[in-house]
Image (cartoon, rainbow, N blue to C red; front, side, top):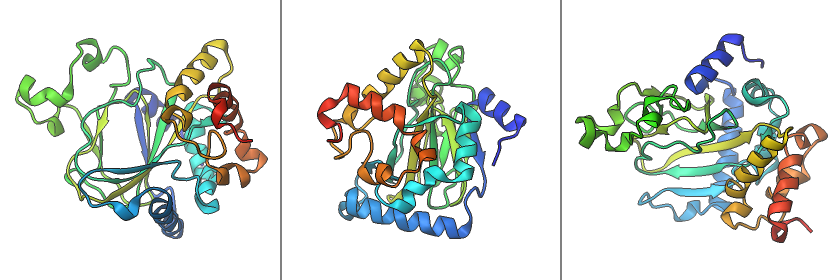
Amino acid sequence: MKLTTAQITFFNTFGYLGIPTLFTEDEVAGIIEGFEWSIQNKGGGTEHDGSKRTMFGGPIEHTPEMCAILDHPGILGLIGGVIGEDFNYCSGDGNYYSGNSGWHPDGNWGQLFAVKVAFYLDPVGRDSGCLRVIPRSQHPDHFIRKEKIDPNKSQELFGVDPRDFPGNVALETSPGDVLIFNHDTYHASFGGSKRRRMFTMNCTRHAKTPEDLELAHKYLGIHSAGGYNVDTGAGMYFPTMIDTASEDRMLHLRQPIEIHDELFPQFARK
């Protein structure tokens, strides 16, 4: 898959993009099976009671089939189309969601440095926990950022419920659809079941300049296994991701591994 010029322009302008049915029905069935095995066996899913969110790291890194998502032509075309074909894969999180997430960005980089790819494994709508975004809020000159407005306080500020914050867009999806958004884009979810299945992949530009290397070190100092004080047994990633990697996949793994080992030598693979 190759993004069109219009799709790239849409992403750069509004800070998000949705691709319907990127995965086939059979592929979705395999992904759901892999996700459920991973969260049940590696992510504490057996203890989920709906009272709070259950989250675990590296959701695509625990089985060979899930690792292969990073090799999927559609995923490579989507991520590569917005931040470059040599992008860095920087892990992610898997979830049984419960409750509202509230409005937040995942970063404040002031530029297109990092993106999140989101996979929803149940149909979700505007009143049942779908992703909502505030278009253009990734830009430093957006009024939310310039005027330091917290959209979670919109009821007190403007008499408007946060889920109805003016200008937000509800991105309703079905399994197989994929969303990608700039880390600086404000997003949230409201409503839905107490066991909403969703996982993500975080990716950054490949660092090629001293300035980008500085950003990559800062990013991985926070958004990585070592940043969360997690010992994967293999450094930046859980072992299966590396052990099953082709040279093509390693293009997206090598730089984060090197930086992570530099930042967190105590967790480096021996």
